[in-house]
Image 1: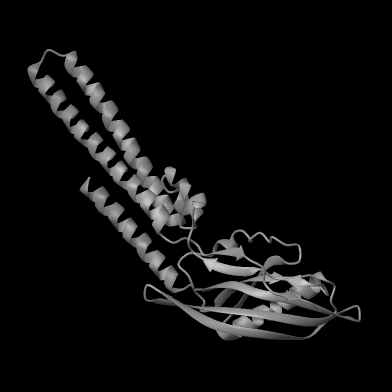
Image 2: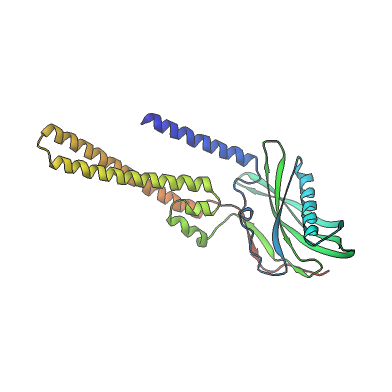
Length: 277
């Protein structure tokens, strides 16, 4: 019993340490939600897309990522050459709980050529996520909002947030579901696994107790009956401990679902500036 407890404790420590190390090699502890599912655009004037690039230097990689995005956009439209692009980019930092995170935002227009005809594109960097690989290289993923070639583009205001409302957190009725919905798969899995284990332990102890009480009623040996009573009492104690642990974990699950931040997501609010070519 003690050996199994120590082994479980060691596994939890290793998982926690692995999570911390991974967090130090990425821009965020949790991958943004838009990496799994692109935000919905409320307008037909622009769409969201992502571009992934790798390199040794983050500053140079941001420029390369933008070039890769432009190249991909050009190939989609049948462009034969990208002549130049101009951008207005700035970086800013957000501090939270002593941790400073850097973000880069930019709006840029691209001039290219499709079958000899000059065409302009307009796009905006909405968000980015980077992680450092074991090879030492960075893997940068950027979320772009882009409009069609040569058309009026009207971008909305994009707000980055790791907060979630009741519409998402009601999933806390099932332990771990809300956490996994918000991108914390490890935490959600541990909560769900703990809840299942405690519930299963309570059921097992309850059924075992009932079985020994039944055996006690069918025996006439006082010594055997005393053994059955002792085992039944131990099973009752185990059942109440499991139920208490389940209740405590369930309360923690609900509080954590409403308080803890989740994966960063993009909320589209209001109307931005219309850009005409």
